[in-house]
Every structure is written in C-alpha cells, then in structure tokens.
Length: 355
Image 1 (spheres, rainbow, N blue to C red):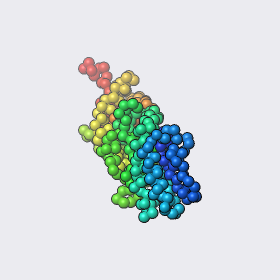
Image 2 (cartoon, helix red, strand yellow):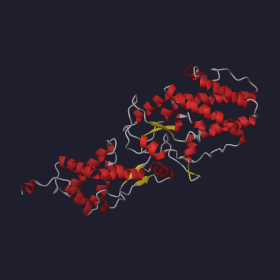
Image 3 (cartoon, one colour):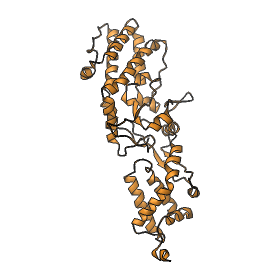
Image 4 (cartoon, rainbow, N blue to C red):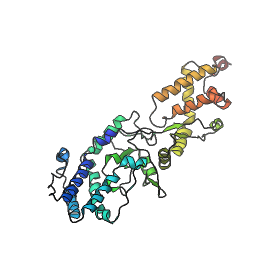
C-alpha cells in the first residue's frame, strides 16, 4: 500500500463486532461459571445495547449458540472462544507473529453457527450505517482520493456509490473476523474484483506469508532509478520498478495486486510522452529553452520534482515525481539519451525559430 488507513476509522465504528464478541464471551463465561445467561438485550454490552436491541436475527443466533454451548464442556467452549480470538488477531496474523489455529472436532461443533453469526454482523454493518461512517472517515483521511493499493483508481465521495470494502482476510475462511472493521478495507474495483479476488492474503501454495497491514505503519515506495536510459527510447519503455522496503509484506502486496505490471503498463509507459511534454512546458514557463545551461535545466527539473512530490496528482499522474527524479539522476550523469529527451521537450531559441 502507498498509504495506510487511520486505525481509528475501524476502532471508532466497530461496535457491531465488539457487541457480538462480548456477547459470546459473556455467554461462554456464564455457562462456565454456572451463572444464568442474561436475556436479550441484556446479553449485549451496555454501551452498544441501544444500537442493536431491535435486531432480531442476531438475537436468535446468539440464543442458538447458547443452546449449542450449554451441554458441552468448559474446555470445548474455551477452545471455541480461543478460535474467535485467533481469527481476530489481525495484526499478528498479518505480520506472522500469530499462528493460525486449525479447527478441530471441538471447534467444528460451533463453526456453522459462528459463520452465520458473524455474517449477520457483516450485514449489520450496512444496516447500522457503521460501514458508511467507516468509509467516510477513511476517505476524509486521504490527501489523494485514490485507492492506496494501486495508487491510481479514484475513490468516490461518501454518499455516492461506495468503493468495495474487501474482507482482507477472506470471510469464508476467517469466519470470525467477517464483521470486524479491522478486516474490512476499501479498495478500488479493479484491485478487488480483477486482482485480489479470492486470494488468501496469508497463504500462497499452502505456505504461510506475511502481508501489509492496511491499518499499520508500513507503506511502500516506488523507485525508477534502475530503469536503463536506453529503455526510454522505446515507444512504451520497459520500466524497472523497485519497491521499498523490500520485505515479505511488500512482496505479497506486489504479487496479489500485480503492482509492478500495472504501474508499468497503465501508469508509466502509457503516459511517458505526456509527462515529458509537461516537464518541457514547465521548464519553458521558467524561461528555459533547448540551449539553456545544464545547471539551469537541473534547477528546473528539481523544482518540478519537488512540486509533484509535495502535491502529488490524483490518478494516473501520481508517479510524475518518480519519473522526474529518474530524469534528474541521468541528467546529472550527463546521459546523452536523457539529455536529448529533456532538451528536445524545450522550445528552440528565437533565432532558430526565425531561421
């Protein structure tokens, strides 16, 4: 991801998941201690009770869960609760510090009911409008209203057609996190429907892997400096993209979302000519021409790169500063290909024009 989502957007609006989890915990603990389980809505945490007391489906599902759990042992109930806890250790599952619990026969007694409970919780995210507020908070936090997974798909404003809110951990496999907003991340339609699809972010070919945390602190950077200058002569240059930090998490992100291929073909190669023209127009606005000194052109290129880095464009132009940085590097090295391309983008001197 190029940008992390603010964790408070998930935490502040996560009352549906919190209510379900705390109700299940109360049911199991009371059964373990031989204490009567409160009736609806008192089984819900007091701070959220008013928001969910009219929701009959979740009420009936919690009663069904109590009836399943009542004749079982304390050990079986505790294993089931540990399973829920494990599937909601989102941070640890993504960074590899939490091992995934494999359901055994005891847990499988609960899984069908758990799945229906948490899927109902997922539906309640829309009915209670907590999902709307979650998306609004994320949208408002983004300086560029684009998908952080690819960097260029635009996000619609709140109140319009909402972007896909993907279950980062697949809801069919990680059933107990289906209603947890820490596991729901807005992403562009192409990222969700064309690239991530039903890929398991935690496994590839049955081997465990780490993944970027959308609500974490690690984000990716793109560098183009390894692109050979000769590639820039092609109609659609073959860009060499380096992603940093080069860690398993960013490698998973690149694999799942085909980041390098998409940026090469959709963002960089298709727009390189227009970016060169824009750079030429910018340098021209500074009074530069094809015969200006190397030092003056470098100063102009650095001004352009700084402008695009501080105020990045939304959409397909979001890597213009990276292109400029690459051109600066080669221009400083006096690479003839890049010097020629930059000077060719500038206006000729007045004498040459008159001639």
